[in-house]
Image (cartoon, rainbow, N blue to C red; front, side, top):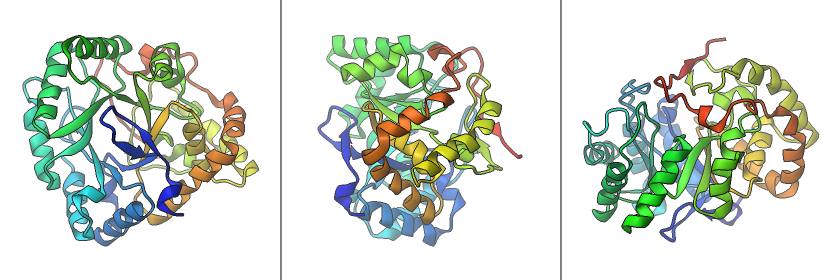
Amino acid sequence: MTESDVDRRKLDATGNKYPLFSLGSWNTWDRMTPDSAVELICRAQAEGCAFFDVAHYNMGPHSEHSQTDILFGNAWRDSGLKREEIQLCGKLWLWKYPELSFREQIETSLDRIGTDRFETIVLGDYFERLDIPRVVTAVNELIADGLVQSWGINNWVLSDTHAALDYAAQSGMIGPSFAQLKYSPVRRSMAEGAGYGSLFGSGKLALQASDCLEGGILALKTPNRKIGADPGDIRARIIAAAPEIAKVARDFDATPAQAVLAFCLANPATANVLFGVSQMAQLEENLGALSLARTHGADIRARMAPFWLDKHVPSEGQRARRRPPQADLITY
């Protein structure tokens, strides 16, 4: 595979384009040796997908204080790649905002990685109602100071996303340009529902698909680590459906992971698919989803239709607003 094989799509309004795939997030770099991390970063760059999601996990349901961002920074420097040869997406957390300011968060995160800027950032989900004007203004102050160029949101309540877009437009500021949402054949309601679906269809937002493999379950893995939350309490049904999804994948001479990622890529709204890999073989396997989506994307989406398991969960219910979102520990 060559760099030209990994398409680049518009994820924000800066003129930058980003690879269809981004790597990292949530303790990815903790799960490999330093040499393996360097090798993975170099391979991603050679394949044209050197777009890395790197965050400081230190509060709320992610208060594990992991070293994953520091480990990434070390591996990137050891790789010898220049800053302009990679793109970085950071995260700002809202669980302690505004007590812990965005500026303090981003400066800490950049220092831990060992760089001076992110191309883009994602504002995480939250427990309480947001002060939208304050949030939009604070992000734009970071943009004005060159610490970041654009921003997106993660599983926000739709009305707050609209409010942020409207306030930014009215105030001459930069609003969110993409939504990082859970998205897969089994979780479609938030990304494909009338609310976010209309924002994607109008071009006001792009979709960054995340947690596509449900912590590895849809790849027929048995995770023994913390994985993402389970909106709608459908995980037992997802576990039961995973072997059937694998049968569909075999009909296309694909692995389950490739078929699931191809499903996501075949949605025209998808500007980027975020996944965590800790082994070179996983990256190579996932790259195979690109050609699969080009040749069989529509067919795969049609075959995956019976596996839409969160139809009963309203889009507003895709995130637990009344209680802190908890990540689950799967040990089966």
